[in-house]
Amino acid sequence: MPDTVLRSLADDLASPDPAVRDDGAYAALARRVREGDLGADDRAWLASEMLVRLAHERVEARAFAPLVLASLVSAGDFEPGWVEAVTRWYVTEQDLRGHDPALGWVHAVAHGADFFGECGAAGVGDAAALLEALGRRLVAPTTFVWRDQEDDRLACALALVLTRDDVDEATSVGWLDHVRAMFAAGSPGPVPAEVSNTMRTLRSLHVALGEQVLRGGQPVAVPHEDLVRREVAGLLAEVTPWFWRPRTT
Image 1 (tube, rainbow, N blue to C red):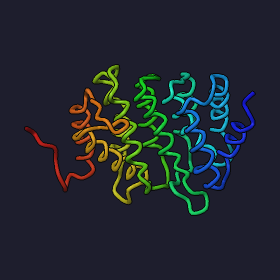
Image 2: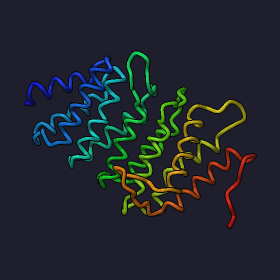
Image 3: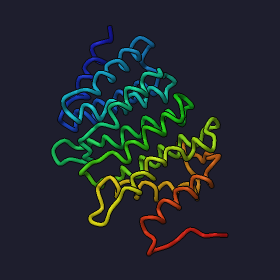
Image 4: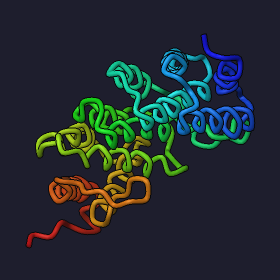
């Protein structure tokens, strides 16, 4: 069984008080994982608790679970079932608030993206499955227009998965089929929230791939960056044909 402190921190991670949850429990748990303070049994227990937490009744409790799993991945722990469990939660989560005046940071979209991005950067999990989860989250119907850089965090996760050597050309752009289908189904009128979120995420990714993607402050290569940028530009051109068009030379 885990020690009393670890159990208390895990319980506090579900607190509706942002000072207890974010500044206290999450910061302490991430530090203990990062500094190697937890043994194998404690890490396994913590991962199991976070997987259960994904089905918690309160969104702030659900949304912080993938951040802890991301910390464990960064420290060298990983089980394939983690990706499956987080994906099931991520693509169906309905409460996409970023910062809430009472709850503080909720950030389900960003925190889930951080988990997938960490898996991508660490070279664990099936790359196509990671990209698929992020692509499905992009196009899932919602009434929330992201306002707290969720688009940048999701774009960063995509870029980190795309740095992997096991991502071939087809996989690097296959996740964009979800976007292509959504754009093709569009009609005149107000822009749906998920379409707005997707456009801004793709723009962020396009900019990053034209510069230097960073991991931990250090540049990392993206093998198929030119192909992905062309595909992204082509999709974005469809929704702003009156503004610009892709270069032909």
